Structures are given as structure tokens and as C-alpha cells.
Amino acid sequence: MSLKNSLHNLKEKYRGTKISPVFNAFHTFLYTPNIVSADRGSQIHDASDLKRVMNTVIIALIPCLLFGIWNAGYQHFLNDAAYNAPVPGFLDSFSTGMAWDYIWIGLKKILPLLIVSYGVGLGVEFLFAAIKGHEVEEGYLVTGMLVPLIVPIDLPLWMLAVAVAFGVVIGKEVFGGTGMNILNPALTIRAFLFFAYPTWMSGDKVWVQGAVERTNEIAAGANIDAISGETILGSLAQNHSIPYSVIDMFLGFIPGSVGETSTLLILLGALYLIFTKVGSWRIILSTFLGGIVMGLIFNFAVTSGWVDAGSKFYGLMSTPWWKHLLLGGFAFGAVYMTTDPVTASQTNKGKWIYGFLAGFIAIMIRIFNPAYPEGVMLAILLMNVFAPTIDYYIIQGNIKKRKKRIKVKTA
Image 1 (tube, rainbow, N blue to C red):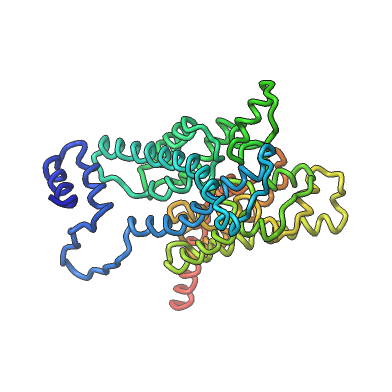
Image 2 (cartoon, rainbow, N blue to C red; image 1 turned 90 degrees about the horizontal axis):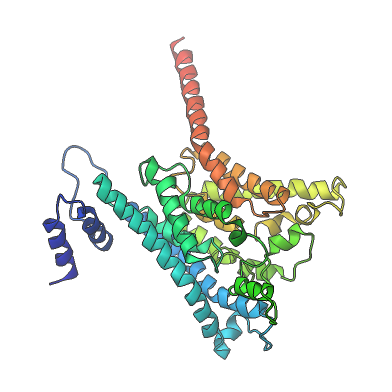
């Protein structure tokens, strides 16, 4: 008996029971449903549905995930003072065979994050589907992939499990499930982690595999070499110089969250989302424009002498505006977070305003909050809250314009 027939038989056997949505979810995820719209009047059919939209975003994220797995091992050896041999770069690592050591380290750390993210998140989704008696929604398919890409690689799995449960229940299910949430679920999970467990989400020792363990051993008195893991933003926030070239920052050979380091792969993902019409090019472009404008304002303040070199904000303020686009999670947030169709603005004009303000505020928070030199998460969550308000006033403005035109025609 085929898998399709087995799932169909289970669906029929448990039809009307509490666990019926679980079998329906597996069946519709693996196979196209054989249910079509009734022939009652005009119907517009499209090949796109929620499952295909979610799968498209996951495909766009896979290059970032694969590179992040390699980079996790690369950063581990690069920052490990106990490793005396030269650390090969990307191409050399494959020719020397060292790449498989990198990938093995990355897999050991990132696969458990993926398993916990999907296991807990989908478990909560199935539970609520059984309680409420509705079908399991595919909305968490993307969130489950996003979460491991935006958290520290050494984050304890139990913390991730607690945060995922919180994000799915409080961030989405209490509002009615997929399509009803007002905040991006992945960023809600990250925000919970940041405020509940700040020492695991910020600082110098959380972005490189093994950094936390070695730091704890040193604090306990062990005589071993240290390992550093400070991000570029952390260095700039402390007015330190950075040892990375522009090409390294663009390609992603730097420490940071698993999926946020390679701007090149993120931009390729953006092109794919725009080509498939899943991601809004207006939001992506306006988010980058907002970041550029805010960066130019701060650069102008430095060149005009309004901010001196002794200021605690000088390091990030003096950073060229274009570098801000390569650092931290700005590009990743602009492409994969602001474009969430549920929590973003829906009107075309609103998308421009929403994206611009998200990018503008992100750079502002990044510079004025040295303790947390990364404002993308907070900026996008803030704009998620204001997105309905933006759309409301744009729609009301359009209604007023139409009423004026009607009065002119009838006068």
C-alpha cells in the first residue's frame, strides 16, 4: 500500500475526531488535495496556495542555511586560539578537505536547533488544531526555518524550546492562528529570548561555536586558550577597529547569527522572492532606502563636527552608510522579516512607508543603543504594530479623494 493511500485511510478512519487535523496536515503537505472549487459562477484559479508560498520562502532560505553551516565551523577554527594551523578559506577548505570539518561542526550545532524549532512549533500547532477542531496551518513552516538562522549557535536547546512555545502560543495562536497574528512570529521568539535570557543573546561570546563553553572553563580556572566571538557591530559600538574586509562582510566570512552573515546570498534570496512574487520589492527596497537615509544623516553629523571622536556613539555613527547594510541582521531582516505578508502593510503606498520606517528606525536603534547594537528586530516589531494604522490612513485618504471627485462631478 502506498503512503498516499495509507494517509487517506487514516484520514477516513479518524474523520471527525480530535486527531483528524494531524493526518490531514501530513496528507496536504505531501500531496495536492483533490478538492476543487464548486462550479458556481465565475471562479479565478491560481496554482499558488499557502503551502507553495511557504515552500518558496524556504527555498530562498536554504542557501543561507547551507552557508551558515559551513561558516559555523570556519569561525570556530578561525577564533580558536588553541588551533595553530592555518585556517583555509571557502574554496581552499574544499580542496584541502577541511570543509568537511567545518560542515560537521555546523551540522552538530544547527541541526538540533532546526529539530527543536520544528518539533516544538509544529507540536503546538497540532495541539491547537486538535483543541479548536480546525486544520493545521502551514504558517510555521517558514518560522521554523527562520528561528535557527537568527539565534546564537550555542543557544541551549531548552531555551529555544521555551521561546518557540511562547512565540507560537502568545505571538500567533491567541490572535487566531496563521494570518491573524500582528507580530512576526520568528521575531517574537527572538525578542522573548533576548529579554528573558539576555546573556545568551548578546555580548562577545555567543556567536562562535564553543565560545561559551571555553569562557565558562576559563572562569572556572582552567588553563586553556581563550576564544573570541565578538561581532563587528559589537566592536564598532565600543569604538574598536574591525579586522574584516568589505568582501568578507559581503560574502559572509564573519561571526554572527547562522543565516545573517552572507549579504550576497540574502540578496540572491531577495531576487528569487521578488521573481516568484512572494516577497514585496517595494518593502525590500524601501527598507534599504530607510537604512541608507538614516546612515547618511549620522555620517553627516560626524563630518560636520557635531559628534566628536570621544563620543560613545562615534564608532557606529562614523561607519559609512553602505557598511550598515552589510552588518548584523539588516539585510536578512529587510528581505525575510519585513516582507511577512501577514504583519506587513498591505497597500502599495503603505509598503513604502512601512519599509522605509523599518530601515530608518533600525539604524537609529543600532547606533543609540550601544548595549544592544542591533536594532532590526525591534524596528520591525514596532512597524508590525503600526502597519494596520498606516494602511487605515492610506485607505481613508483614498476614500476622501474619491468623495471629492464625486462632488466635483455632481456639482
